[in-house]
Amino acid sequence: MLKRVAEGVLVHESEFIQSNAVVVQGSGDGVLLIDPGITSAELVDIAKDLRESGQSVVAGFSTHPDWDHVLWHADLGDAPRYGTARCAASMRELLAHADWEARVAGGLPPEYAEDIPMELLGLITGLPAEAERIEWDGPTVRIIEHRAHAPGHAALLIEERGVLVAGDMLSDILMPFLDLDAADPIEDYLAALRLFESVADDVVVVVPGHGSVGGAQQLRERIKQDRAYAEALRDGGVIDDVRVGPSAPLDWLPEVHQWQLERLGISGAE
Image (cartoon, rainbow, N blue to C red; front, top):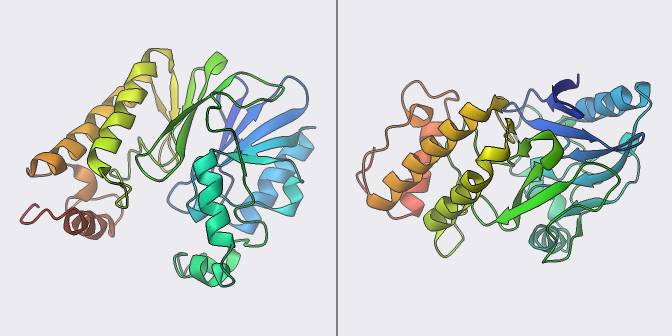
């Protein structure tokens, strides 16, 4: 079910880690669909809700190249699907492998794997490297590209609506997942948080890739919390974050946290 979070902006929350698909209504009957997911049934439901309201998808956008953000279904139509140039390049590299489907399947959650549509995964058209906005017949959507969570990761600011679609950042249930293949993953993350802070005055709603939709105050609190996590990693200090502690929202998060510490070469941190 699509839920209105701001004028002309609706969200569908998946059962899988509270994944958020975002619908932005355009000037006519067309919509921009951001990060649709996760199961075939959920994608069909999104298409059905749009069809019953007299709307259709005229463009798609993937905030980054993780499998759960590059899904699609035939019922959504054949509208162009965009991402940053780096996002599209990452998907082209994956799909060039004859065994790409097996590579993706290895990372799927077992409880959902058979219900995730693979046929149209990753068919992303890269926008020009200097693109600052999505060109479409609707409200201005500013692209805020950075390298924090993944290569070519982009948040989207729907300017007239005051909505920040954050991709896999600014979650209330997940701690920062760093791009550990980057040269300086911690500084990349801190730089992205500074970008978010620079537009915070223009935001009234934040939609994370996973987790709860928040208001302006939650946005600032999440920036602060994620900065504290990243700075503690940088400084080798103790991580005081409920998302990785004994009461973590998901029982596998402390293990992922420890894996990040190991990849970063941080020993003895708890």
